[in-house]
Image (cartoon, rainbow, N blue to C red; front, side):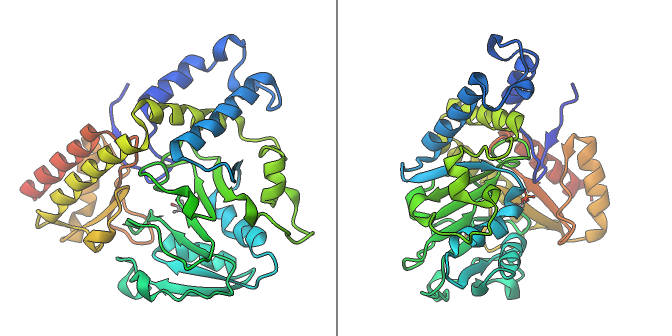
Length: 359
Ligand SMILES: Cc1ncc(COP(=O)(O)O)c(C=O)c1O
């Protein structure tokens, strides 16, 4: 097997132990004689996988009993519209905080369905910080306030849960869910695609407080209706069964690693080492205000942009893959989710130092 370190922003590196277990169980899951891919989603084997998936996620995140946990399809992108479709409930406005490319997308999809109040935006600062939360415009008539806890492209992350003065708080946690403890009871709804910290692409987790599931427009198809999905255990349509299983394996791996507090410690240390390497160099820099820097996605640029190609080629020769920044902003980006090892981050830091020395 070729040993590489995969810094992809998503789909991204999975824990090796998870892939090994999936390989071992591929042809015959637990003596069933079947691959998980072949099982009926309503059969007893898959039902046990689904039940453990939900209970492991609930226990890892500490999801209170008055929240529904859904496993849906369509990515976080589908939720950009499903959230207003489910949560507006007769209201005509929703508040959005724009801190980077993903929150802007969420707000622009919502704008087709309601009046979007931009509560705050860091666009004028090129999305390098989180606007002062004391100055956010909170419209009491809005159905909810939406924000993105980690901006995967711009590398900006919230270190606190915003105070919304009573508005239900909706959060896109796609790229930092399960990387740090979070008090779920402060949220109305949390959603996240699985392809960064939870498994392969193909599943979207929605955690929603039951009292927010009221009347929706009668025209809303059941498959987009959270209350209906909750009633049907997220199986109105045939779910992405194998992906649910893989997400379940990742959750079990995370539990075995010591859970969220243990993984947070590791994440803090990996990110601190990488940012220190960037900040102490003259070749590399990260534009994000230090108190808003992401522990998961670390964008950086080279002071001489003409060296980027050589940097990426040299990195690949060392097995350091997928370091090219998002096409919309360029530069480099190292995504260091839960499954990225200390060794991987250290190998990147060593390569960066060596590249700087020789260029
Ligand atoms: C923060 C965030 N939100 C939403 C998305 C969109 O996810 P998907 O492509 O699964 O719809 C991404 C994808 O990278 C993301 O990072």
